[in-house]
Image: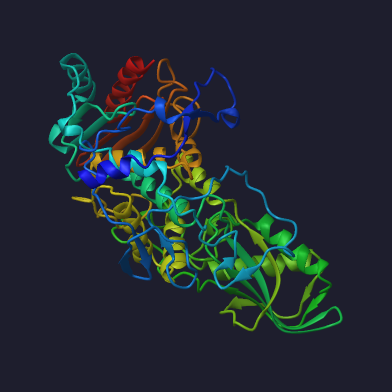
Length: 526
């Protein structure tokens, strides 16, 4: 612990924390943001969180190099093509940006994996950040003061509901002010997390992709231009944008026309090779395909829906839709549409960019969007390990957790959405994920604000609608037929995680118990 104490002394001159504002009844969700409060070191608890509660694993600084881990003597800068990222460096601050498409690409450099700068890993300063202070000291909670018997009894009674076994329940509450243990029941028991799994993707995407990174979709030309005629084919290449729509294809088509092309003599091809061809993730029920998540592909338009039906060949559907968009924009295409791969020598004609990573994480967590979660996970694999596969994304996500000291005992990651029957998390691991997201000055704002606000928006819009929790609690929900979960923040006072399993789980009763649990904490935090 001597080395840990030395690290804790290396705190910055001032740390910026974001504290949730209470939401007045009726206030528009779009206006509910986080207030920024500058806190001097003297005002911070010392230590910020007790290091035993979450049992953060102490690690030497390290960096992912393809699939190997290099242990470093000192923090390092990002080196493109070699060291992808250093686990102990912080992201530059990024703001939430609404879904906005760029109207020009002249100033957007691009490479094999998207525009350099916009969708490439963010270079970070080398000093260890404030989140290390919080993270490294967050888990000696077992030795911290126990919660009062009265509060513990109240919380236990709140979670005691018919049909939900305590043997299949894990719960943990920590005090964000001082790291004190407030409540704990089976916090190390591996349980199915349902959509609390998305917290892993949120943390990994903000860490490795960067809050401001964007995903390109490009139009490439194969052939040559003769005045206004493109002699050859056009290729629509996807890089995993889960929000790509028919309207975006119309914008791309108009840009092709504005480039001076009025006729294309060849076909329109769709390239989905940035990801593998697996349409689902491991451990999914057959019914989850299409019903819970569209087919996974690097090129999907309108979530693979064509005339109200989800198709099994999203890339081909995208090629056909883009060909129609070109014709409507005044570009004649003399041949049909198909699926094919772009070549390195193909010419960039146009491109469009997705919302920022921060915006995608917000959509994923607010609406519990399975498709965004799975696409971001594959994107992580493609960007960091050059493999656009679920397994590669899982490797990246697990390394992010390990590098940040999240306790991984009992943790099993199979997908990004939490639909997989193989997924397992502990309440302690979930609390640690939340603490490291809360404590990272590089992306605290997009991480915390991505969570639904109680009684106001997202999957909590119709839950916790009365005081004191309404507008005060931000939390990620999770529901499958075998799991119900709720984890998040009670103001700036508590971080909590509740995971409950059953066969099946009486999810309505479980939610009622979770809501009572959070209301009690909210009353104490006010």
